[in-house]
Length: 149
Image 1 (cartoon, one colour):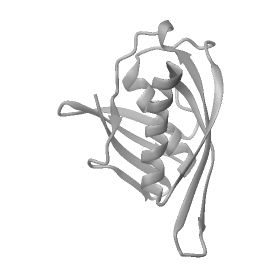
Image 2 (cartoon, rainbow, N blue to C red):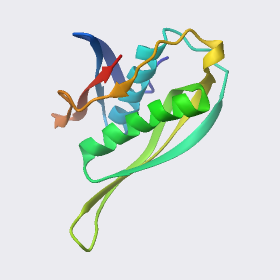
Image 3 (cartoon, helix red, strand yellow):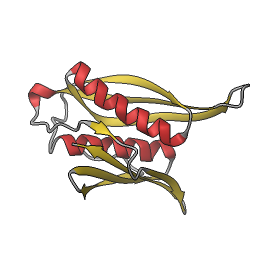
Image 4 (cartoon, one colour):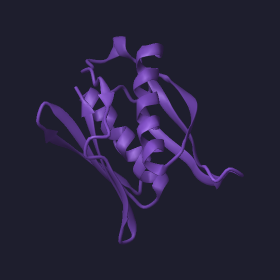
């Protein structure tokens, strides 16, 4: 699993859990890089051509909640579809304010689902808010996310 241009991630030891530290040129890049880190935490290698692409949309009240909900949806989809989402692409992240002054963040993304029967996958149980960080640093976005394993 290789991140796309403009993205990078590293897996970090975190007590009994695992953390992903990621960076990207854009908010979309860093979200996709964290998702690639989630996939890497789940499996060492995935088949290059196996699995079909699927789309997903996520809406949340804040940027951090959007990242949490996106990763939570990927874990949920893994369990429901019995596929590991890989090769993540986040096409757009947009922000709008409702008339009642509630912020609304939306993400449009896609991933390729590799059947779990084709890989040796470890279970990542959940994404956590513990120590979550999402911020702009200099000319790029950085994220740190802890997963319960």
